[in-house]
Length: 94
Length: 423
Image (cartoon, rainbow over all chains, first blue to last red):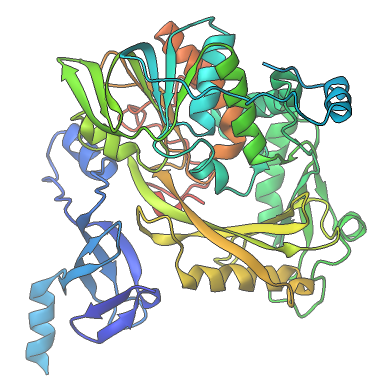
């Protein structure tokens, strides 16, 4: 079991989370050439080592997270909210 | 090469088994090969065999970073079937099944191909309709052995499934693919290795590729843990590690993610299950057969996150054993003997690639998702054809890297462009 330190809920088992995928992809502008969209949707660097990826804490706070994880050792290097603005807005509501 | 026959077995029995020679050489690495195949798994070895056998090519090497048969060749659940319905896949997997049917004779090596039938359990009217469509496509395209069964036939064939009314997903019927079955994975690796070696192919084990040297749009040499090798053509068949080699060639991204898939084997039991049985509904996904040694061999879903680690995670062990219990409650007290994981190329549409690449002399065989084992003979056959002829035969025309640019997805499951969803 991988243990993911969720910034909202604390350390939780990875089975509470849903894996998003490569978090380093930046989607192009809507009117960008088809090739740019092809590359963003279909091509992956598929790194062996530390990669940035997204996970959703589906059975917890339901927030999307940006996780730096080693794809060989499964070691987690950092976890931050994927949408910092949304996190800040939720914090300010309290 | 000693030709195997009942007579040689008898003769060796009479003289103390002293006449057997090793089945393939352990040759020294040459400085140059016309064709270098990277990856001594089933597809790499089959490719080497067909390059030598079908195309009469010489001066070929297969490089394997570990030992042959030690990667995914030794980590799969050995299921062979052709129940694919999308154009492209349909012809390809049917072709593969036909090659399987003759493989032991072709290789003079008993690959223990057992056409014990592959039975997919059906639990809803929707599932029956969907499978009827696919299996009708199969019947119309060269596979008259597929049938839809009601409960009566199914109970007769497999009496000990969970037929109780209070099952979470009661069984309504089954889709049956009679020519499907299992084969002995080691024998497939060894049979192809022996056949390739006897036709002059050098199988180089403990030789990991660590770099590629390029001159313009050509790969000129490979750097390996056993020295630099110059190559006329380079062919990649390294499921799981494709992206790493792709990046060594300086080619950037691929429509592939590396995921791990677990498999399990129980302690040996007396004959219990004569068929391959598949269960999949409500998020569960499970397939099981019994090996010739008696072990129940089974598997389920991916671990659901990208990984290069060849070790499985515990939540999937639980999922898979729960699925086992839900259809075969008689397994409840059976001990699990081993559990392991292999890393597989999960592609964006669940279909593989056998194609040319942006480099003139680099060829790609990758993206086999869950299903590389059954594809072995056709994969080797057509990859060899591509390398030898330097053009894709129409059989593999759409297994190229450009199909997404053309808007073509060969998406058997209809899951969309997320590699982990293509079960």
